[in-house]
Length: 249
Image (cartoon, rainbow, N blue to C red; front, side, top):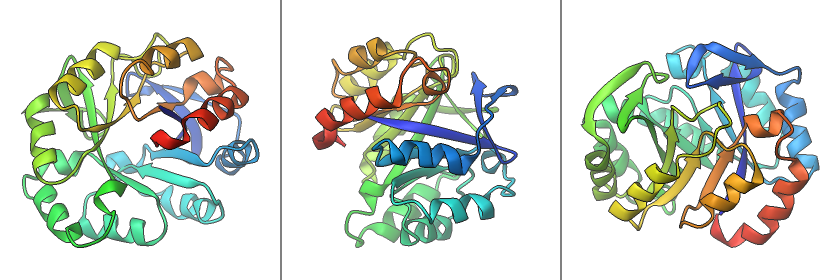
């Protein structure tokens, strides 16, 4: 299991939200460029970036953000407001290593089908698309976690798998930003239902002990944000762990 450090961006600033609530944010006194460089200079080669404005349809961060991303050699897993096949294609062609799709895949019944058809003949593109599943009490949430979907969690996973998508980023909203431990039981249910998925865990990780607990299961990677900013997990610990886990990413 690989650890992927996270950077969440709101109004051009590095932040972390609590339970996905835009009104419960913690701002950090560090620039986006400095945070990326801090990870890169300490040996991190993969980073998770979410544009929280983009998740609500506001792309004011995007120009400056992409100028920064283009300058890094790190692999970037990126999400936030991606609504069209063209956006996905442009991001992948521009060098974004993985693109996260969430709201559009849930609200538009044809989007995943169209996405599947668009990339069916492009080598490895399906592996570079991540399906975001943001969950609260096993209810799928979308639009920056402000709306609820009637689609059952496992049914949605089955639909995605049938269309050729197998990499999932699953966030338990009740855990997110609270440093109270990861949603191990939720991940166990997902993996028992679909052992073939490539699961990325997200939310609640507070320590390396939490990482050890998640590593007991066939989870491919875990996104860690607030625990790093709050000095509960060091970049050196992440580097040491990831050197042992390169084969799993």
